[in-house]
Image: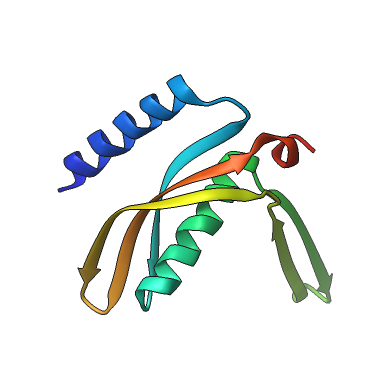
Length: 109
């Protein structure tokens, strides 16, 4: 099952690489409580994969104990098109493999 997903993802990526002009296409996996949540997670993962993620953290220590520990993550991108490649039901969660096309103009900012 996993081997099929990898082969499918690689073939789609190769096909998109050959025909891409102005948009970057990625194939990602998303998991959620229902199908809509799995698709939202996949789109979020596509933006993170294509545009990267900015990370910032802050830790406050007083008297040898951590008082505050914050981690902030941000990605920015514009998804121009999505296509669901496969869906699956696992235990109590849904799984979706999605191909997303992202605008390169906003990714390169």
